Length: 143
Image (tube, rainbow, N blue to C red; front, top):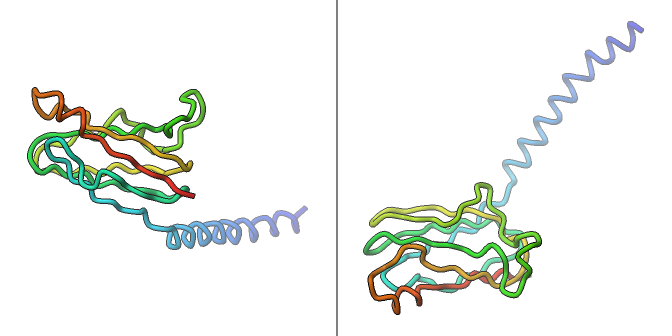
């Protein structure tokens, strides 16, 4: 019994040390996110087409050029059933990302499934609806 207790006392710290070292190596070797800078200005996103790979962690850095805007990403690919698992996975789910004039906002997610995901401005740009309705874009997640 004493041998087993001594062995446990010796192995426990060694096991904890190995676990901590493994986690540190995973963190240090983690792939950085794919960063895309997007500028929002009246009636357009620049760029309005974004391409990423399935499985990538993505950061969209949204910047405004003229006034408050928002970016709302559909979490389901075009043609996908919206009662299944979403193709875009957010750590902190949000309805949309609003950003004030001359400010930046980061939207981070994992592009889990291939497909084309629509996005649009969620803040009305002006009283003229014809321009605001055209403020759209596509996130294309490839294999």
